[in-house]
Image 1 (tube, rainbow, N blue to C red):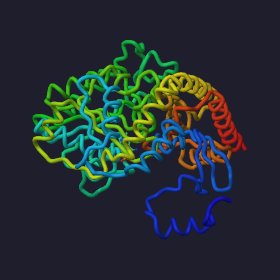
Image 2: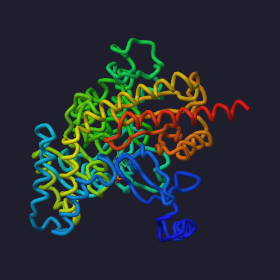
Image 3: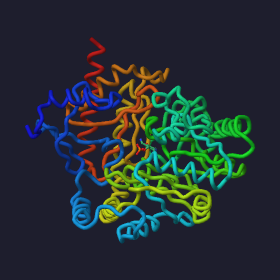
Length: 458
Ligand code: PMP
């Protein structure tokens, strides 16, 4: 209806000229025309509630008027300078962003994507520690560049070609799927149905995972390590949470060996988790380096690495780090507007309130349907893990997951998928969503689950 190109022609061009790796996500690819707040509209005028926000990226809503106005103002003034010249938007943004981070995390490096941010964080950790080895969790996603592919440990993204030299993986202390279960947070309104029999407050599963972590540190790594990367909650792996207290102990063990601790806040940052602005704060830890992207620009390509003056100086002494587009005036003007909107519209508080409500509503479906194995997450980062049955916890077969996913889309709800077996639905909408949006989403999901159950019963 709105497009200059017919749908069929778009599919043809896509097939001929765009990367064959780009996935369409749905059997009938979605051709979008417009976005408004938490809503998307396709070329036929169909409306969708966007509960994945461009992979956890559109933080304050599609085409937010304040962000648009800031972008338009800067567009007519100055697009680009490279870092050779000063321009006020970068200083305004640096001041605003640094105010949101605790001491001594006050020095900001601006780049253009999450992969670039983690790439730079690796370089920093190595320059500062004078060591090479870096550890990250299995199931963690930290980027797709050839160096960050070493940090990323999700099978489908790995290649048999050499990449990410000096990187080691360690067991992810996955509360639901890990061998010892565990308890992620006794304060959460929704608890994972646990495998372990110990009480949540004294959960020994954490200690068993810590023993595993020590094993990685002691046996497979050289004398000292450069750093340890962790997402406060794993995103791509299907909203995986760790046992309470794990990261705190892991950080201590890494520091004992001279390594730096890096929190990858690409998905968890900017108030999404509700109770705190940064995911690391929910673990009561203070990283040496924080990387951020996605929600920082509400969809505009920008990213940042924040660290201490000491570590920033170690990098400066070892390399002349340069980035043509990092911190360009457009990105900084947009970044500042995004931070203002999060504050003015109380979006962190909204994540907490509406997110907690949503978690509880989806947990009711877990109790209602045998194939909903786990409902977890925090604020507006929620995972719904699909299983064959609750007892075996075997992942629900792909065709069945896809059927539910596509049915949600047909009923006007877009959600994400993740996990090693793509068995977990991921929900991470713009932080401006409302309770009625949640009611709609839960009803659509319930209906897709009911249709699945009825079809299998036939
Ligand atoms: N870290 C995390 C936690 C991510 O989820 C992603 C992207 N999915 C990245 C890093 C890489 O970001 P980008 O795609 O912008 O390079």
